Image (tube, rainbow, N blue to C red):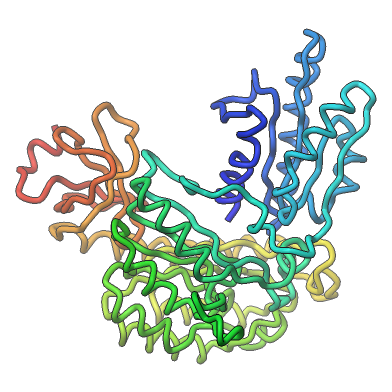
Amino acid sequence: MNVYDSDRMADVLAPLGYGLVETPEHADMVILNTCHIREKAAEKVYSELGRLRLLKNAREQDGGQMILAVAGCVAQAEGEEILDRAPYVDIVFGPQTYHRLGEMVARASRAGAKGARVLDTDFPTEAKFDHLPANTKGARDGDGRTAFLTVQEGCDKFCAFCVVPYTRGAEYSRPAADVLAEAARLAEGGVREITLLGQNVNNYHGAEPHAHDEPDAVWGLGRLIAAVAEIGGVERIRYTTSYPADVDEDLINAHAQVPALMPFLHLPVQSGSDTVLKAMNRRHNADDYRRLVDRLRAARPDLGLSSDFIVGFPGETDDDFATTMKLVEEIGFVQAYSFKYSPRPGTPAALMDTQVDEAVKSERLAALQDLLNAQQRAFNQPCIGQTLDVLLDRAGRDPGQLVGRSPYMQAVHVDGVGLELGTIVGLRITAGHANSLTGVLAGANTERATA
């Protein structure tokens, strides 16, 4: 989502004459687009601002100007604090306001040496997407053959650990016609893989196209995926991030019926303990999650799962943690993201008086990550000898090397001689590593790939 937002900020700023640069040293404006999910991510903002302050001062000493801005969820949650702790910041704006960025830049530029700063963290009364320039490129990796497309924003679930409802606001789904139009523009620009985005993307309920006689008619995510798959040029579809309780039958059927929908799903469970899940205000228990996984795998037997885990949530006992480990062992994950719980200001969990000792958190996290890493290696190793369709989307570190993504989001490296970025090729996997695979063009000899 943050990558998509950054790309749209660039779209807003382009008519003002701004273009992206690789490094901040000679930039006229630097925007930090921030995440507030974990404490470490928030604190990194202030560290980075301190470094940028030196560049800003040097620019001003040379008679120039560098506008320094903080965007995103940290800006939304800590706007006043940012201005207090970093008074050299010119603009602070939340994730629902970047359609007003041009106006903010104009105000900051006019203020100049007067020291006036801009703070905009108001939630709009209208959909911000209605006030953004047309997106013709998406947020891309590599040569632009993959793109992110936001279809839903905000969250109404209010998990006890999460700041998203407070920083992103209430759930909003874009009309299906708008999503399809944007997807078509991306495909016309050469995009072949689209990832549909939302803080709770499974609860997408966008207005149905052309439903003039039925103003309340909506599409769910499953129907939207099927429609995107019908757009010429779109060969791969993914979606994230999922909320288990909002997976409906249409979405499960899409996994069975839409070949373009990749057999990889990020489905956060957070914990395997019903006690912890209830304290988190999650709307599922461990058995709900197991049953959902069974239904998804029945629809798509080759489905690979990824998930999120929080260890050390307030009140988590050794037995609670053991149930999480048991769930991981039972289900098996292709990839996973796991973190120690960190209190986020303003969330209910931050006020709980049953905080877990940091040393215990660290010990549990290490044990969980050992298990998850072993499962990832166990999934990668059997890929050796298989042929996987890989979308080559960027250059590798080594000369002549290309890198792409398998259907299961694995990074696959290949000798790029005779191959082109932006193509989907069958690669025979010759080696499996902890976080990536190595392959050769199907039918090619191994000696060429390892030379």
